[in-house]
Image (tube, rainbow, N blue to C red; front, side, top):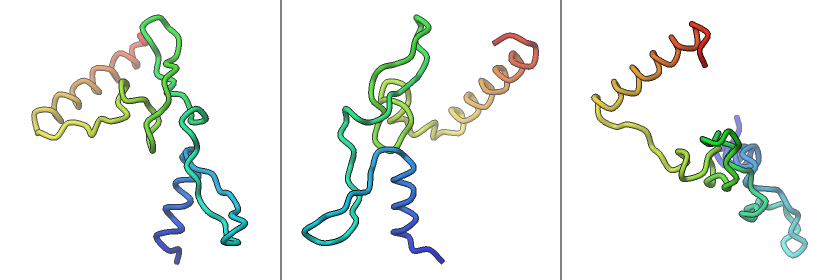
Length: 98
């Protein structure tokens, strides 16, 4: 069975926000946070049709303006509103409208 640390390490490497480096002083591999300028771009579609050029929030795929800091709806009313929105979007896609 894998340890929790090993699973966290693998997730961090897969997220693209960390890299593994060898520390000569301690003679061990360590995770190092990738500098912000090297992190992946948000990539959300803008109103102009291009992609957002902001950097993604740590551990997320989007920037803070496009939902990277969002924790989602918490109230039952909010969850119902999102569910209805998703159903409408799915129906539009089925009918051929994007």
